[in-house]
Length: 117
Image 1 (tube, rainbow, N blue to C red):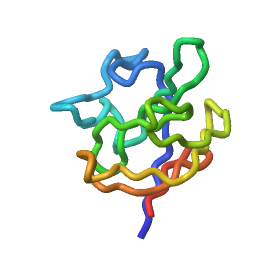
Image 2: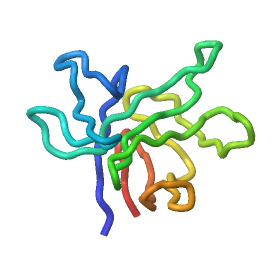
Image 3: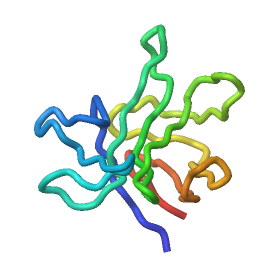
Image 4: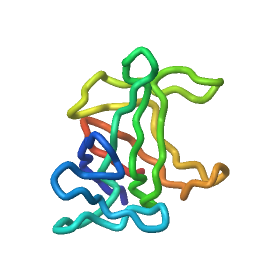
């Protein structure tokens, strides 16, 4: 059974403009005061020439920070991005690889929603 997690873009994954707190403990997102759930926060990041280079996100599976790249850096895998800063879609699927310290969550980011498979 797949799960869906709508994301929320923020400027800084470590601080919230309204509360100043996003709820981090031991490098895991544990919740924002007054909200339920986790795994929905993400932030686009830029390279040196101010173009969007990738996406940093809270993994819907384990709540750890993870990232995907939209531009090639040191032969790392690259994802396609639809250019939307409000409802991003990225392809191919995202795997928080266990072989690289991840939890094994696998899914898609489509129209601003993480969908696990």
